[in-house]
Image 1 (cartoon, rainbow, N blue to C red):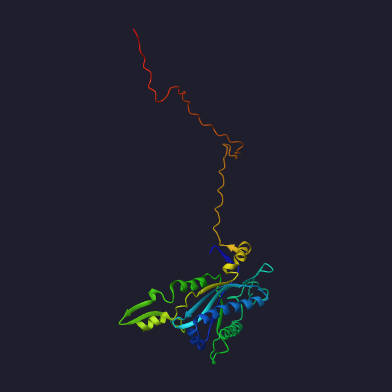
Image 2 (cartoon, one colour):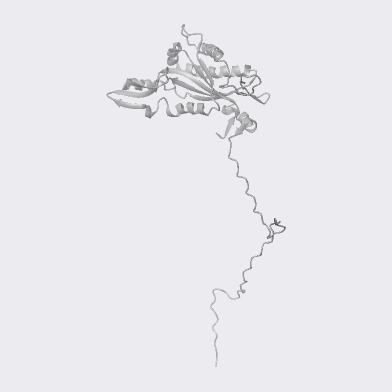
Length: 304
């Protein structure tokens, strides 16, 4: 990237409980829209109430509908810097979690943005309210605690590559489909518990259904920008580019070469007092042409 924000980036993952997946499958557009909006509203509320930020954050949210085994598991990934922009005061604020050593001004390992337990409670309340307002009946066995993961990801480049990989290639890449033989498809996946690579074999029809269940409703936007990263906030982005964005490091220019030292026959250093360039010899002037170039030379006629 040519420029980057001077703040630590975080990847926040909002997950819905398993009891809500049947409702999400039956009303995909309503539930997916509620998940995206409530995830952003939750982070915006925490940022506005945080004493270090006290402003509107900027975030990139991406909706995923599958887990590592390609099962139906809707969740939202949000990548955002630990920073906020106060438009009314025209202030840019960042949040740094300092180390535990007394007097230390170095950021602690991993960093800290918001409490994941508090994020889960607020996110659950917002989603329930949004679905109830939309006229949907919630299951009676919904848990009180919803899982929200919040972890630091450095400058954010690795997290953005991770999210972009799913946007470009889809749920599964072609190299992970190992073979299709005897009406069965064998593909490579990752075990959620151990994190190790595993293989899974399904009948062809079941494999196609596994992929088709992740097709989003028509014209639904999977990736969205919020806050000062939204395209409508181009004036705020321009202000940040001028004041609070730093360019990528560039290679330093080579130092100038010293001029050669001229020495006299006696060994002393000679000083150049004046330079005089010898004028070049001017080319000889050609004789003026008095005759027309297209006229034949006159012929001398002698008479006797």
